[in-house]
Image 1 (cartoon, protein in one colour):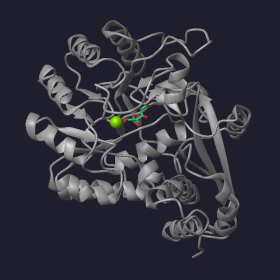
Image 2 (cartoon, rainbow, N blue to C red):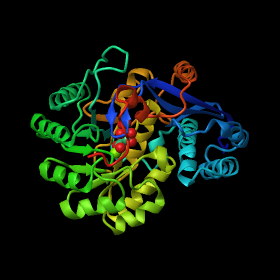
Image 3 (cartoon, rainbow, N blue to C red):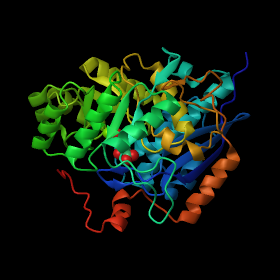
Length: 414
Ligand code: GKR
Ligand code: MG
């Protein structure tokens, strides 16, 4: 019996920039370009891909990572993780454990893509097998400007009131068939945001709804919003900041609370469980160290009685494929996952039609690895765009201040 050669023979990191609409949130507004990092691995005769956050791979560590990853076996992801961890501890002692896991995450995804391609098996099978053929996502609605500063209106137009949000939802649901709704809040006065959610409830009575102000509300505002939205929410996401604050809101409202903000590291889990602060943990493999660790996180959620679903940031199709594989393999996933994909798909490195949201869900790819083709020319193009942009990090607050110099991103705001 011959053993498959999985030695890594190539490791390339591409910081990318791609178009993003002016979506409003508690931190400000999305800039014209969103940033992501794509990792390309070569192993045996395959090329594999992973996608991570824009700040996932600090450029100063890439040469050392390349030197130490070349020659490792893509099947040995624990070894790869410890090598990545070691390089970062040596070269970037300022980075904490979570930042090191964020660096490992896209490398792990690329390693799993490579494993799947070498074996002729989909990534979901490397995670224990898909328990569902399709993974549901929610329509992720945002208040937004009509267009970027100094640019024409975009195809979505403005959404700054209940009518605008309902029109956005109609368009998104019409196009992608979503069967659940998430409204990003924390951007406008809570009265407008509550009225928008109520308008969505009226327009789409059968669909579960959530609202997420990213901790922009005070305790009293959160209670008031919870009262006004009584009976129309599936869950309330990060109404206030911090585990203690969430615990108080849950105790006083009884509403299920979800978070991607107050439980973002392993050490947050126990205090959150003890104080019953979080009923649904929004996992994110880009933060939590990859797909296998996300499955482990889901098992912890199960053991501690928390529900589990999935958070997103602006992203491309490699991430959507990875999210879909891991979501398919998590037994206790009981909610539609978040995705920004409709906002960013026009610039995707996975060519049009490579991965689609139909009837609100993505069919779990069955081809080898992640099961999506990546266009290397497109990756180079978006990398050039990143280089030309001179951008380093996301800064929604500074961009908002170009339109509104008095804007402050200090929270809580209302
Ligand atoms: O894209 O503006 C955004 C979101 O607010 C994002 O930054 C959050 O991380 O989607 C996220 C969330 O659920 O909090
Ligand atoms: Mg959130």
